[in-house]
Length: 213
Image (cartoon, rainbow, N blue to C red; front, side):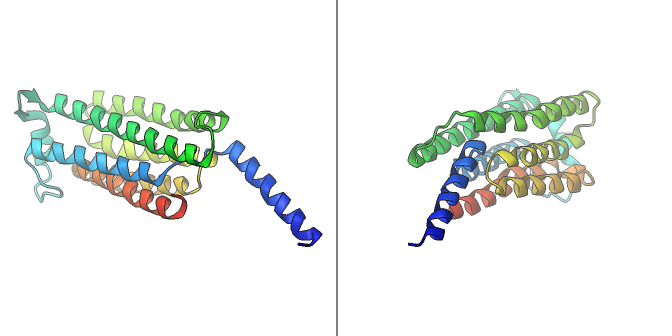
């Protein structure tokens, strides 16, 4: 091995160490697959509760049934909230598990400066979007909540992508594009969530898993 090759290897190692210190690189593709699967399961519960099928030709029935259905001794608002929080809790638990497992395999810390920067970058658009969506609900603009959640979630991913793997950027762009498209088709809010939080996460997770494990 000549001197030039040694210098190149040294520079490569330095670059890798710098990247690891500034970026959180232990995101697991299985986390995306798990989150998407949880979202699909949650959507299936809502469809079953409302007795609807995806992309029903009479889509205005979605909001009519959303505000009038009462089954299992629960009103639709309660079912939606319970389902949403359950999906979020199970998805986060799985994400933490798979990410922690990958970090341990790589010999990296799970909680360090890079993950703190990532969480702050994600939190700013997510908190802003959450408040905005509450205002939409309070104003009776329920149909715009699903596309708004996708847009702000996508902005959060784009904002956080500089602190983690680059593929997160493209997942964010896809979520934003889907949300903007959906703002013109507000009668299909649940389908938007299925595509964005369900299928896009699964596709992203498969790509990530094949690339990085």
